Image 1 (tube, helix red, strand yellow):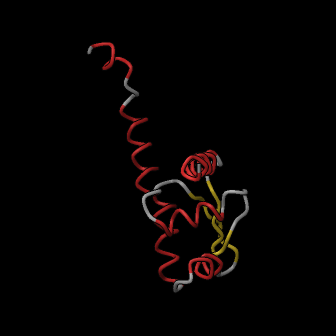
Image 2 (tube, one colour):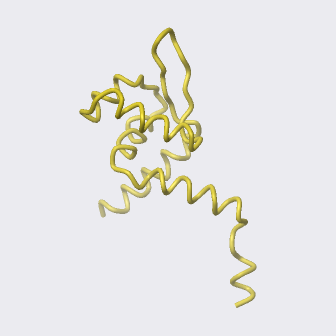
Length: 102
């Protein structure tokens, strides 16, 4: 049992994994992450169209993902553009979807 305990990841890593998996636990956020998985960026209005929701709802999801440090953003005039902070997030999502499709 001691060996198992010694093999556990550090608390910081477990906390980061928990944050990521909490973000992935929402279908709308999964769609956003998938749309951003090729490294491109989308504005809030693009995400609202993609999700077929109001801009306020899309903005809420994007803000949540940004607060979790999964997305980064830049402002251009009145528009905010979002992209993945780390493309490994897209790799994790792609792997999960591939495994579930088999």
